[in-house]
Image: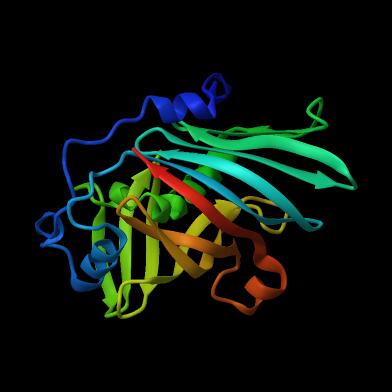
Length: 248
């Protein structure tokens, strides 16, 4: 069961790799991929296997609700996003997670009454799509032989890899200095709240910040139907500001 591991345990058992990031490590990659990674990771930075983020923002549940959260993303294990918000003055808390190939969500009202629980293959596939998109917060996880890079233009590159059994194609758009401006992928989910299917999922990067040798997005708007008019009108459901990031 994924619920057996806490966010603290997921973080505490992570460790730095012995390797450090050097441009020679990615010299064989296509130009746009190299530009992104060289901007995201400073030379000499230890290659982290995990990141712990603290964040705040708004999430769309019928209406927009403010939230505070922390998240641990760990290479090869998964992620836990633990958050708290309020609806009609009542606290809602819980977590979304993908741990060792199993996705799960558990949310409670006032810390007592279950209001949203889920698990199973569809949720796991959807969580895998989310986890792959959030690799932009742990760019060292994209510096492995398992990730296949392909540039589609001077400012666009694609990272292809697997999460659980899902084959992921993560498209990254950047400016001429390597700053990310957009991310996009096909993610399994039910944005229409009917049946699960693949849909365009992505986000707009509005700000970035540097933490311990890593430069990552710190202000992002995320949602379904990315790249269409429906993103702004109905697909966007998550607006986040990263307040701090710790790597190990």
